[in-house]
Image (tube, rainbow, N blue to C red; front, side, top):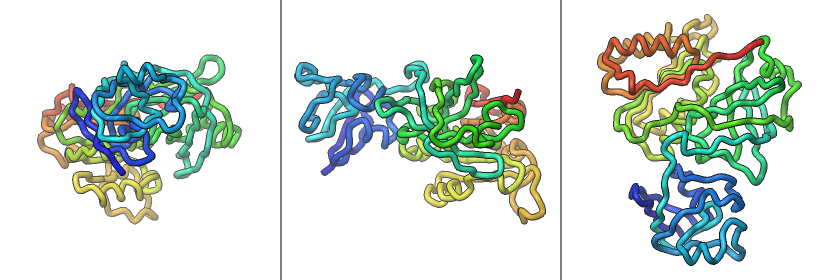
Length: 338
């Protein structure tokens, strides 16, 4: 049996299914409820229950007691629903509302998506979760106060592990060890995050252009998956600029998005197509492709992620077609070598 949940003061609604916690249901539907450990210990997800009854099963978790329940407080990471609910929650809207954590993680898996891109899944301790906004990044903390920044490629509702897309840079202190298998499955890493202001502005109704370069696709993947979970139907256009066909390392996934969501459109752009690619699609620079396809960019929100040269070139070019620079959101990052 499922129940309806109404969230105040936003008046957003979602459905909670049997056997599901209130927090899981909210995150699954793209809502950004505050939380911490997701295991009933820290109490960060406590919020008011204005109407209806929660279900904690046979035993109350450590972070809540009968006095809380009598006061109309619920622990949303541990409670299911016994009825329709009206709850009061201050939803997370900005990075400053999310605590930055320093945590140990274990590499759960590392698989090569292309010759020089690896997808790494980091497993957090059982009693910990890292809340984040889709598109933010984490730092991997290394010796001698060095750190390497990597964007999160998963959406917040899918936070059991953290997904990273890591490109191999020759001479990179961290990536040489990863691709050389000195660091691999079961290795322990310490991370800090979340960081960054690259996230979906949900208060806008403008259509969206995403411009990704290489592994700059990673945070955009998280944002797009969050938008789908949220039920956002604003038109979305993803332009992904890479060198050759093999560098579109998640082509099947993105094509699946385009097939299943009529408001999502995908345009891959190859700057150095190889003869064996047999490529008949767009070529050249990804910024030029966007300039060719849109006459008036004042009507769009633009999200750009990748190497600084691409991000800054896009910013400078798009203003000539009316782009509002305040609606240009970027995640420009340098790949660090030694």
